[in-house]
Image (cartoon, rainbow, N blue to C red):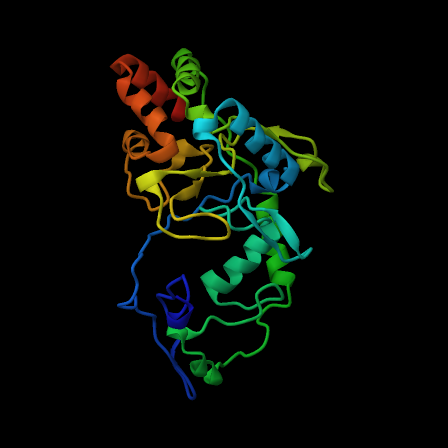
Length: 290
């Protein structure tokens, strides 16, 4: 809804000045889709950024061959730095291809700071004439802040695993057996990288970072090639530190989150529901070790 201000709501404004009056935006009456968003964790994303596009494309082809009923696909989006199509890795719809672009996008859309990748202000409520009173026209950041933020995210370490007890080990086997690992792929490997700590590393995000049709769990939003029903597989590392689950935070327990799965996640959901109580308990132990 570009004519009403775009897909993100600016719910804060800087208020009144000598030549401007920027109030918070309102949800337009014409809006047919309203979706909440839980902030995605930033830890370990330098490793994800260091995985090659070909790795994700190969993974998608392998899933299509071995588990076609749950196979994912990459979201092909524009990489603004190299001006080519690339595999999206970041955001709930895998709509951003690199951490550097992710940082620039966040600077504009989350903080209102224009930068070389995103030089144009968001027009309040879609009315670009209001920008005539912009107290800080031109680029608000020359790219240095974006680069520093991207570097900060790149070097954030992934969370350490909790203790691996017998129940945790048994729960991981159950996780595999009910089909959770079809999408929440345990391990990925990075490619070449200028930072030695990120080069050729095996890490354990428990995600394929691909799009999957999640049926009613989809958010109704289209981004890049992602359809209204498709969501990027959420990585499970750090799960034990999270208290709200799913893209909109609707689930307050792991059980609730699993039982909300639909579409390509329905079979794993049904497998979880069919488990005897002891097996469900061990699966929870495994998930709470991540």
